[in-house]
Length: 84
Image (cartoon, rainbow, N blue to C red; front, side, top):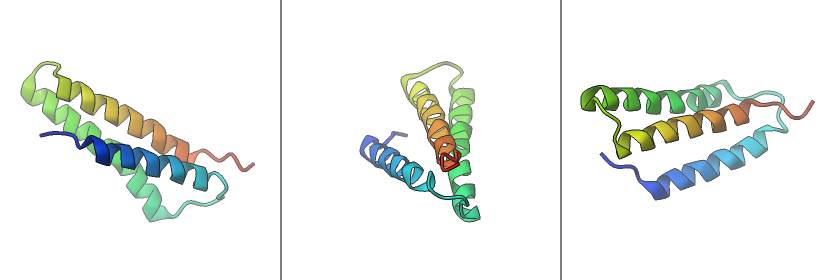
């Protein structure tokens, strides 16, 4: 397994732009909210499965953990209502 760094940077850019867009919205589409909420959970599950099979911290495992935490924080930013 490997992480496509270029695709990950694009995802971060998209989430940053989406967060900025959503700050002016009062309502978020239910499907969008579900997708956003699921992304960090999927990475978390991959991380936990990887760590269980390897039994020790690895560079790849550490990167998965970092991505999971970063995505979770970015998704939360999408749900923060700054319009009030």
